[in-house]
Image (cartoon, rainbow, N blue to C red; front, side, top):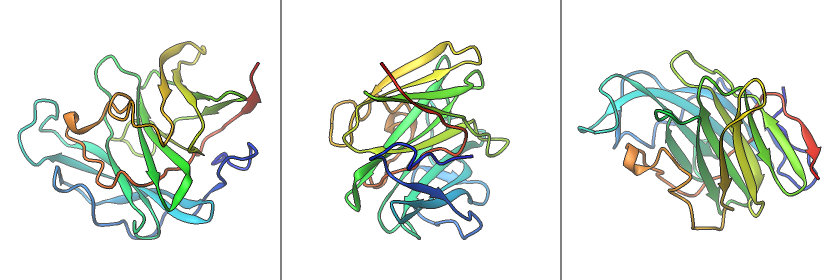
Length: 221
């Protein structure tokens, strides 16, 4: 299992650590009423700075045309031991007919790093990320029974990336061109779980890591 960093020269160095600490009790209750305890799924460091990814189940705090009354999973990412450098909240659902939902997070604390956190459909076997020189494959993780397969990636903030969900035969199910951390264009267009779906990126200042799971780095032609 690899967090995938140090594998590619010039990319952020991310490491997995012990996820048994106390969850951060802040963030998204304005939009999502928690119906169960928060739980840390993954934790570690990126370029020496602590991060954690936690989840809980919720219901909408007010009537919503897109969020059902049944509990749904929420992911929260925090940078810093207690989220002091920012964070993001993601409604971890996949819209009908979609195979890939991904959210960007960037922080002035690590200005050269951007984090992508996403969820995929059950039909997705791999998430493939391509840059000008490299192709990376991330294995989505089923972290909890009621949470869809998820992945996360730390990447250079100025790197232009293309992300795709692949089935077990290598067929592309869905593909997206990702904006760089400093590009305003496409912030909402690439986030399929944005405010229109009841989400709130409560900091818009924070970076994320790269997904545990096997990962290959190859030079592309």
